[in-house]
Length: 557
Image (cartoon, rainbow, N blue to C red; front, side):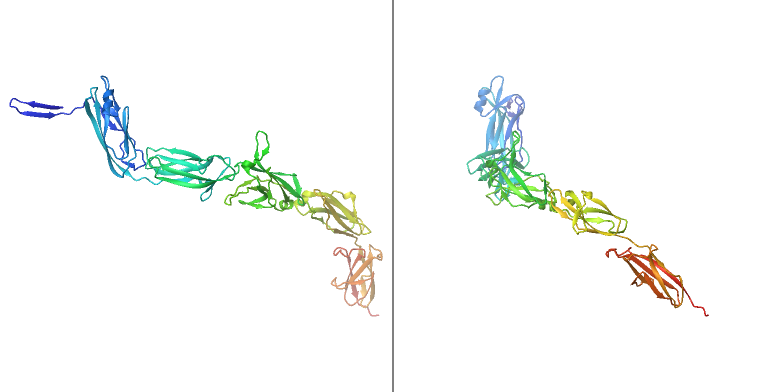
């Protein structure tokens, strides 16, 4: 308000006095310090912060039309706007939006006016904000490498809809991502500006585009750009190869629950998926492909070691593979069925592995072991305990019928039925004899019959030797001693040896022994055995006796 006063002398004085009209104020809701050149959406709004109601309009004319006796209208006049920003007015708010075009420091200013129905205007506020614009960061964009096969080549299974997650970094701004392929299919992803931070990250799952055909290689482009500055962008080009169904399985079925090591195992390997509705294992060439190479293998660490030839599966997804059972018998490891797709691309290897399968394989060849007897030589009456010991647990598992054979008087092996199917037997011998015994063994799984090594059992008798004759003699006297068996003359089949040096040397003799007595006492040893005793008996076959003879000198007549 301008007040002018004049006194009686004509002196004039003026006074300018401001005052708040209608108690109303406006302010920016956010005052930036820095903004990102070209890319950041700078959204600044002027709001009525206090005072009477005053609806905001874009122009003075619109505000005049809206004003009446009960309500006032206001409008904002932007006096400074950096290049790139534009205005937007709604009720209760006036805003600017857009991206600042130039680098450096900038000012943004506005004046606020109130208007009555007659069009009279009053300025009710103003504000100036200073901020600086900085350069935008280059965009980064990466695709999840789980499906990456090599540089620029990714794979996705025919039933999968996602290529993986892409991630990127940008300045604080809106970012648009486009995924397209060479067939013209496109997918758009929008990532809105965050209200905080100078740098923001963005990510989403990229989806497979269009219809898939197995083993197709399709060119894809993944492109990210700033929404307000699309000329700032980044692009990744890659090829996508469609691979077989991700959940297809490999089943291995065997033609028998148990095998002998001499058998050939025939395994039926099936590829496909189990239909839960029908319970059937189904194979679809369109989604799983054909001509898979299938083989059986052992697993060593992370490597599968083939143990069969490679067989090509038919159009029904089934392959029959022959395997030498002796390989399983010797290694005793779980077996895997390995299926490899016939990929047209060298860098792509698609494998499906079955669950491990333990195959029971028993020994199919002859049962091995030995016949063992605690005694092989014994004095009659003799009792020989004999058993057959298998060479290994594998032999024990397949040990079937056991027959025991003894050599008869004609030299032929004869089976003794009394000992059939016994692993332990006892043979009694009451007279001196030589017995040859062996076991005849049957592999109960394959019927292979084998003979064990033979064991020779010897029973023998020992005479009761006694030396009969004088105990005293005169020096120079010729005396005769007799070897008796059990106090009687020995039979003709006896062998007698004599020793005069306490058994150091022995001389073969007769049952009669003559010696000329010297001047010293004599110690005479004799030993006797039966001639029927086997020559293989090396100890215990002799009966020994000692005769002491004292010597006296003849007395003179």
